[in-house]
Length: 275
Image 1 (cartoon, rainbow, N blue to C red):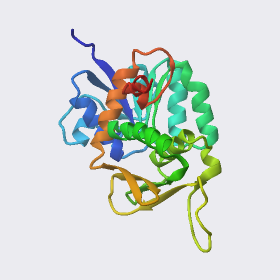
Image 2 (tube, one colour):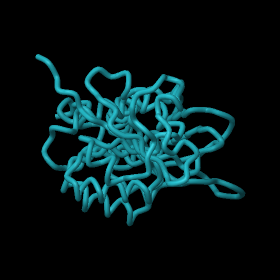
Image 3 (cartoon, helix red, strand yellow):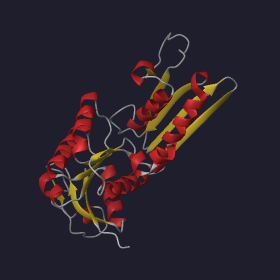
Image 4 (cartoon, rainbow, N blue to C red):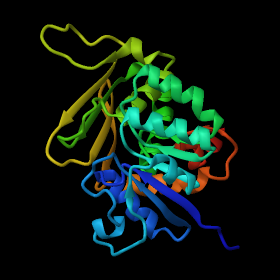
C-alpha cells in the first residue's frame, strides 16, 4: 500500500537540532520538506535550505513567514524556545495543523497553556524524542515501583556547554516518573543541589544534578542505591540524529490522529504495552 507524502516544516531550521531534523525529513521517503522557519534577520534568510546544509538545492528557502510556512504544511516540527513554541502552537491551533514540540524549559504557566490549547489540534509534546529514552522511562517506572523506599534514587544529566536550561527536560521527566511511581509529588521531594552541612539524606528525596561541559550531546543516569548494591540505568546520545529520527517518527504518526495532546509513549505504543 502506497503512503501519501506528508508535508513537514521545521521551526528553528538553522539551529543544531533543526539542521538534523531538516536532513532527516529530506531523507525520509514518506515526507516532503514544505518549509524551513527561522527568526527574522537570520543570516540564512531567503537562501535555499539544502544549499545552506551542503545537500544541494531542494527548492525550499529559509523563511520567517510563520503563516505562509504553516499553511503549506501538514505538520510543523518545533525545536526552538518556549516563547516561540507557544507562538507556533497557537498558529497550529488556528490553522488546524499538527505540531511536534521537542522544546524544553517551559515554566508552569507555559505548560498549562500547552495543556489547554494542544487538545484543539494534534500535538506531540515530549522533552526527549529519542526512542531509547522513552523506553528507559518505562524501565524506570517498573524499577522504581519494585524497589520503592528501600533504594535511594538520583538523576544525573550531562550536556554540552551551550545548553541554556537546567536540569534538562529529560532529567525532570525521569524524576517525575520516579516520584509518581512511588506515590510522591516531585516538587516536594526534589533536591537540585547539595552544599555544606546538609545533614543525612532524607528518605524519599530524589536528587537531580546537572553538569555542563564541552560538546556532550546528552547523557542521563538514574541511580538506585540500596543496602549492598546499586543499579544504574544509563542513556547516552551519541549524536542528535536519534532525536531527529524520533521527531520525524512523531510527525508521521500524529498527522492522521484525532485532536489531542500526545507524547512519545503514544507514538511508540508504549502505553498499550503497559496495560
